[in-house]
Length: 183
Length: 100
Ligand SMILES: [Zn+2]
Image 1 (cartoon, chains in turn red, cyan):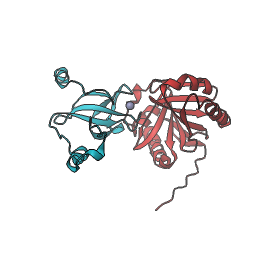
Image 2 (cartoon, rainbow over the protein chains, first blue to last red):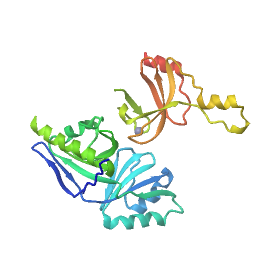
Image 3 (spheres, chains in turn cyan, purple):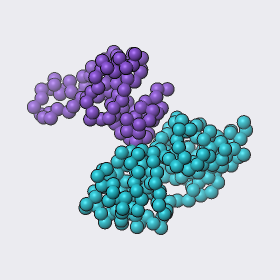
Image 4 (cartoon, rainbow over the protein chains, first blue to last red):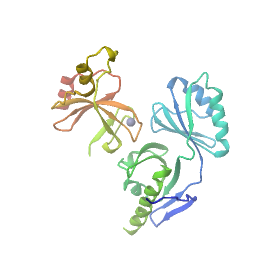
């Protein structure tokens, strides 16, 4: 069996006239599960109004939140603020029961940017990318791997990929990047 | 590819994001030890295997992660409706009318 030990060094992964794919620096990541009744208390503790529509995002400071499910949120936060966030939630645990799990090392994030960014995603994602609004996000698939897709602008996306699936997904992105430039 | 409407995401999305999870509305018996072997077998394994509209569970695995229920015609593969887990069985005759 081949052991894959990718280095995951932040920086450009693939570049062509069509788009740029780059690996972003590590960041703090949390998975939050909670009942709707405790959202106001959690929103105060985190400092962001937690959105309740699936796909909606909210942010404040270095914190970014994406609603993935009726009771699930993905939270990104600068590593320097991660401890403050988890302590803030822990301090209200008794009155607002929830599950906050640190998943910083579970995923890597790549940014896909350029006029053909949406076209690149269609190579592995079965969703209609055009229907994902700017400033929204979703959990979906990329060539068989579950990913979280963030749309930051018309031609700018982020893809959170589980570490173990990353070599596979990144290889597809690199091939696609060259292919789209050859058209 | 089938398109499936997720009643939690309120979006119609490609089948690849979903997994099938068997017949719906099969409640676990409240007191399993009071049941005969045959009754327990029926609960575990015996399904209606209908030809036509079938009440079944699906899961939006690569999405919101929720289980929900659907009525799918097993002959045409057409989804008559989907609804949230825990909601009662929708009335089949009105669904069929709406589909026609
Ligand atoms: Zn869903």
